[in-house]
Image 1 (cartoon, rainbow, N blue to C red):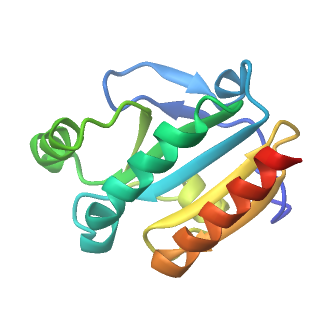
Image 2: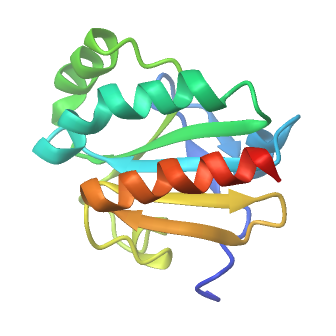
Length: 147
């Protein structure tokens, strides 16, 4: 994979067994913010309230949001609890940690949380990791809505 382009993968929706294409998330959107997280990741869980504020602020600005859960199937109840407790409204895709050759590998996601911003051409226009990456993500989005 070209490290700057992510293609149009089929993703599995956490809320059901349905699959959807990344393209579907660009309807009426110019950018897509992706949060890679897991229920086992303490920094991921602690960042959810701040990520929710980003969603509430920027989802009205032609910016889409997607969570990609990289987790274990047996953690489904814990994941549902985190989603419900934090009132997460943006779509969540699921990738099983025991699977190999997933887009986690293909997109070179080595740390959690990782944040990507992808444009309509599926080019990665921002990549950030952890709390520092989150602060840079906020700055990036603020600049993006002004352009």
